[in-house]
Each structure stands twice: as C-alpha cells, then as structure tokens.
Length: 264
Ligand SMILES: Nc1ncnc2c1ncn2[C@@H]1O[C@H](COP(=O)(O)OP(=O)(O)OP(=O)(O)O)[C@@H](O)[C@H]1O
Ligand SMILES: [Mg+2]
Image 1 (cartoon, protein in one colour):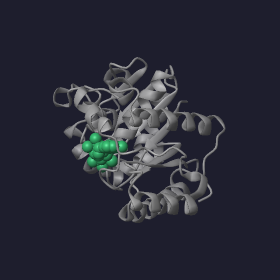
Image 2 (tube, protein in one colour; image 1 turned 90 degrees about the vertical axis):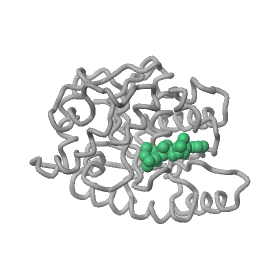
Image 3 (spheres, helix red, strand yellow; image 1 turned 30 degrees about the vertical axis):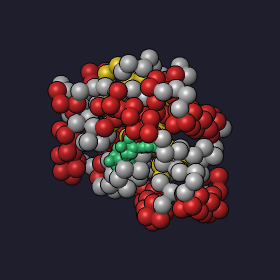
Image 4 (tube, rainbow, N blue to C red; image 1 turned 90 degrees about the horizontal axis):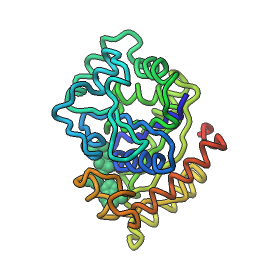
C-alpha cells in the first residue's frame, strides 16, 4: 500500500491546497509516483494543476459513491509522475449522500483499501475541505498520517486545538493507526512579531511535531495556480519553492523512519 497522507485543517485558507499541490509535485520530482486526491468540492487542487473542473466526465464523487475505479477517473498532470483524482461542485452533495451510506464514516477507507492494493503509487496525498464534517471524518479515517498546515496567528492556535481533539477521537474510534506526520507553519512573515511569537509558542508546546521548515509568505506561491503549475515548475528558485522542497525532504525522512507522533 502507498503512504496515505491527508492535508487537513478545518480552518479555511491556511494553505492546505498550496501544500498538497506542492508537496505532491516535489515528491513526483523525486520520481516518486504520486496521486493527489482532490477531496474538496471547491476543486482548487484540480484547477491549480491545470485541469478544467467544469467539464469533468467523472470525479471524486463517482469514486466515493459509485465506486468507479481509480483508473477510470485519475488524470495525468503536466508534471511527470504526478496524477490527480479531480473534484468539482458535484462533490457538494457528498455529505448528504454519505449520510445514507452504511458505514458512512469509513466509506473512503473501504474504497481506498480496495483500489490502492495493486496501485502503482508510492504516495497518495489528500487535499481536504475546510470543515470537520462527514467527508473530513472519512478522510481522517482513511489516512495513515496527517499534515496540518497552520498560519502563525492566534485563531490558528485555537483551530489547531479543536483539530487535535477530533484527531484523538478518530484514532480512538475509527482509525487506531492514524498519526500526525507534522504541523506545517505556512505564510510565515519573518519580520512580523506575531508570526515569530506564535511559531515559538508552537515549538515550545508541540516540540518535534512542528516541521523544522517554515513556509514563508511568498507571492510566487499564490501566482503559480493561475499558471496551472506547481511552484517547482513555475519558479524553482523562489523561497516558496525551496521551502516546499525542504519540507518534502523532512517528510521523506519521517516516513522512512516511521517517525510520527501518535502520543499526543
Ligand atoms: N505561503 C504562501 N504565500 C503566499 N500566499 C499563499 C501561501 N500559501 C497559500 N497562499 C495563498 O493563500 C490562499 C489560501 O491558500 P490555500 O487555497 O492553499 O488554502 P486552503 O487551506 O486550501 O483554503 P480552503 O480552506 O479554502 O481550501 C490562496 O490564495 C493561496 O494562493
Ligand atoms: Mg483548499
């Protein structure tokens, strides 16, 4: 089975999609065959990689509800070794449709388990929506590890505490094998005191759970999706690109050493 890593945070706009696209692209650039599952009805990972989300024949919805095989839905991207399971507004009704499914909280785990058994992927990354509703619960029940992007701001800390409560509940009930691969500080501004204070506070309280690498606020990262490219293709030497490459190396080290924190 591939490493299944979900990028989660119920808070909106913290950099989940930017992180999912760019870590997936960095893994692919290292010749690791990677599937990015866009599990968000907003379809930002889909459009950010240059796939038109408005005329998809099939999407994440068909995968989860109709059990359409991955091989029929997954699309190539312009990055070699990077594939996407696209999403769009069709997935807006997933919450309601999952409610009437037997085993509704583990539907995604069941399907991924079946479909990834003989898949060619080394890594599967899941970009998730900004809530803790049934779809997000499915994602955390299906993943092996979580990456939690967070902005170094006060409300970010509050949101993180709620998310960790949910993570613990899911580990106790639905997915005992789940662990946190790391918390990733995003949109950090080195000259901003609040950024520095919150980052320091997080390192003191969560220690090694926080990735060493911090993602700076970098306008090139925000521009890249409109050129339908991950940052390593759009501006490989930018600070955003170098930081996503660095955190990818940390991820590879942590996954190969099986180093995650299931203790919190
Ligand atoms: N490090 C960064 N520097 C500058 N802009 C960034 C950075 N990371 C993300 N952004 C921009 O911030 C906005 C929110 O980022 P993104 O879409 O990745 O967040 P998200 O958590 O996926 O949002 P949602 O909760 O809506 O899915 C986007 O416009 C994105 O381009
Ligand atoms: Mg997003």
